[in-house]
Length: 354
Image 1 (cartoon, rainbow, N blue to C red):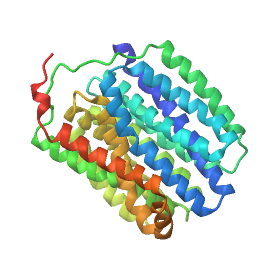
Image 2 (cartoon, rainbow, N blue to C red):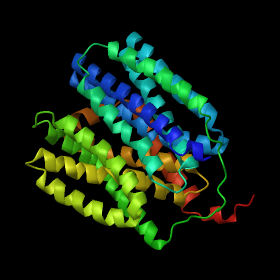
Image 3 (cartoon, rainbow, N blue to C red):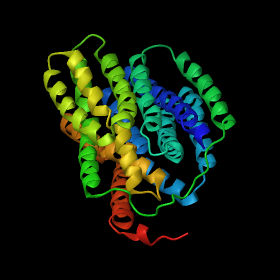
Image 4 (cartoon, helix red, strand yellow):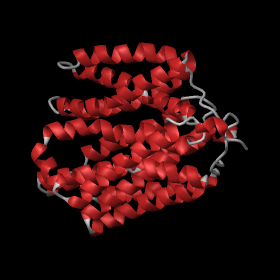
C-alpha cells in the first residue's frame, strides 16, 4: 500500500482544489449578477449541502465499505456541475454542493486508508481546497470559460485517480479508540478551534481592507495546512499543537493592523486541520468516512452559523420562512445528534469482532 501513501492523497488534493475552485467561482460569479438576498440564500443552501451533507455521505460510505462508487459519484457530480451552471446558475451551484460533499468525504476516506498514522498525506488532501476556493472567488468576475478549463483538468485528474488504483476499504486491526484521556482533551480543543471557520470568515472581511488581502489569507491557510501536516509528523502532533495554537492567537491579535501578521495567524490556525482529521479518525477507527465528515464537514457547518446569524438577521429570517430549507437544516441537526448518541457516546466499538 506504500505506493498510495502520497499518490492518491495528492491526486485527491488536486481534485479537492478543482472542486472548491469551481464552487468559489460559481458563487462569486452568481453574486456579481444577482441581488444580495438571492446570493446569500444560495450560499446558505450551498453550505448546508456541501458541509452538512458530508455526514450522511460519510455514514453511507462506511456502511457500503466500497470507495470506487463514491469516487465515481464525486467526479461525475463535479463534472456535471459545470454544464448545469451554464444551463441554470443556481442549479449548477447546488450540484456543485453535492459534489463537494462527496469529494471531501471520499478523498478523506482514501487518505485515511493509506496515511499510516501520519498527517502529511492528510495535509496534501486538505490544503488545496482553500487555495482553490480563494482563487475561484477572486476571479469570479471573469468569463465563464475558466469553468471549461477546470472541467478539462477534472477529466485529467480523474483518469489519474483510477489509473493509480484506489485503495481498498480495510477494517482496522484494532477495534477500539486509540485515544487516551489526554488525546480526547486535545481533540476537544481542536474541535473548538474548528470555530476557525467562523474566525476565517471574519478575517476575510478584515482582509478586504487590504490590497490582495484575500489572496494573502488564502495562501496562508494553504501553506499552514501543508506545513502543519509535515511538521506534526516531524516533531509530534502534541508538541506542534502546543506551539501553533498560542502562536495563532498571538498573530491574530497583532493582525488587526497588519495583513502579514494576520496571514501568519491564519496559517497557524489552519495548520491544525490535518491533526484534527487524524485524531477524529483515531477516535472512530471503524468509521473513517464519518470521521472525515465530522472533522471537515459538520464542524465547519456548525462553526459558520454564528457569522450568518449575527451579520444578516433579515436574510436569515427570510431563509427560515422557506419551509423546505428549514426542514433540510433541522434534519441535519437531528441526524448529527442521532449519530453522536448512537455511535460516539455508546462504547459499542469495543464489542465488534471479525
